[in-house]
Length: 196
Image (tube, rainbow, N blue to C red):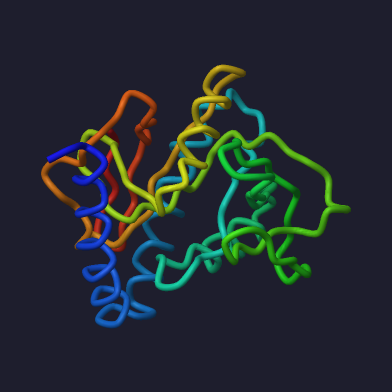
């Protein structure tokens, strides 16, 4: 079986598992992630030598784990934040400044991002949605490669910490990988925090 088919198989399987996990856990899953991220934030942000680390979150698609309550809480303690914007297919994401309750506009693939008038930012910490993952830090997403391209670019141009986000049920022994796949540095689920 080719790597491509393997990834397709894992994605199909993971979508069913994620749907069940989202239904079963509901707000409890969001709350568990919220608590784990807030507990981890101090450790992660300390890596930026006293500078205020800029966090890139995301607006969840479908039944992805909802990171917005944690982002609102971090905004309350002064953490600068941004959201990703898809520029075009097969290109890295770019990030625009975001504050809770600001208007968002629809982008490619049904994503929501800040208005084009919001300033561009370079994040220090990126929350990366994961469809499935393993403890090596490898993940599968929707299949467009946006986060892989983005993490590769950010890592070439400076320091960045990638935090993978998913329900714990989505962990597998080993995700099939290709040369271009970028691992995350941390994994946070509703149940646990894993330093890769």
